Length: 76
Image (cartoon, rainbow, N blue to C red; front, top):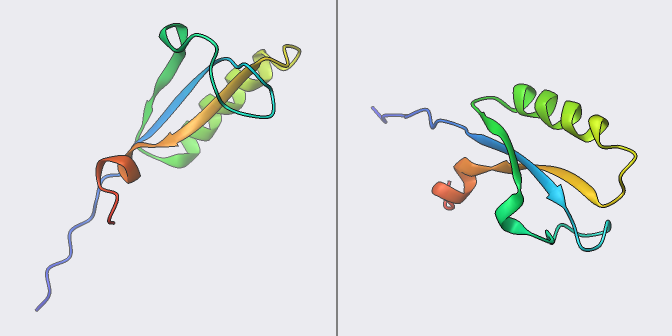
């Protein structure tokens, strides 16, 4: 009998001022706003959407969702 383990998914929502709106290279990485870490994608997307809409008039502000679980265990 094969044992299956459910892996925890973690999503980081962060944003800040970018050098070029077409990319995600941040101007000042030390001032990145961390909106939070979420255990499901829907909650992360809600946080991302709220922050992105709040800053929609500023083309140099960008928020992203980072799949932390893929960084912590890249082979899975």
